[in-house]
Length: 112
Length: 111
Image (cartoon, rainbow over all chains, first blue to last red; front, side, top):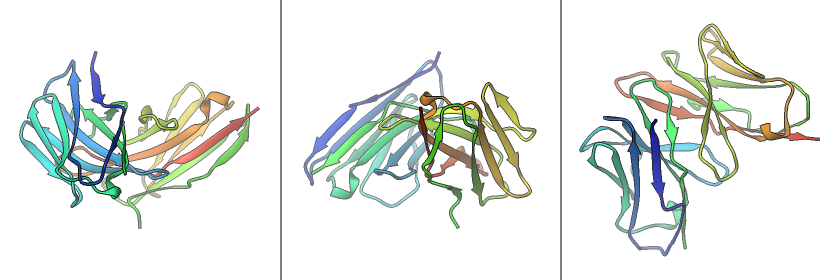
């Protein structure tokens, strides 16, 4: 069966510090991978998606970047965090087009 | 107009009640529809897909109205454990799987 791992669960970082969140998927190959962010009391905002190694599409201009160095690994990064980067970050995968998403357990990021 | 719109609620209902949520979407070419459930500070979990003919899973019934561009979720015999936020999800047509989430409808079931 397929599983998705995301870590860490919580993170407190000072403004201006770097960020690296990692997500890995097991039990499947060539998944579509996604990073979403959810601000407190708000809906999920799609940040990045990837259909293959090295292929990253960005949905919104922002302070973040994403990379996919391996088929089942997706990384969210920032060189310098802003207060507005605080939120609940969710990694997700899907088998393909129009397929349902499966989420990791999320990372609660607080930038102070 | 938002791509996916939901009534934020909260819907406060007693145990055993029947409750229905609606969700409207703006892209008439959308092809995939889902309902997810999200508990506080947790990841969303798939509740059910929504098919054109409507579908049922136990106490949950989902329906799609393409002409009016909305989907619905009906929960019968509500349980305390049904308390959560229900997210409506719609894909955007195109060469990739881009699912757009509504902001969610909060349900609180009380004894």
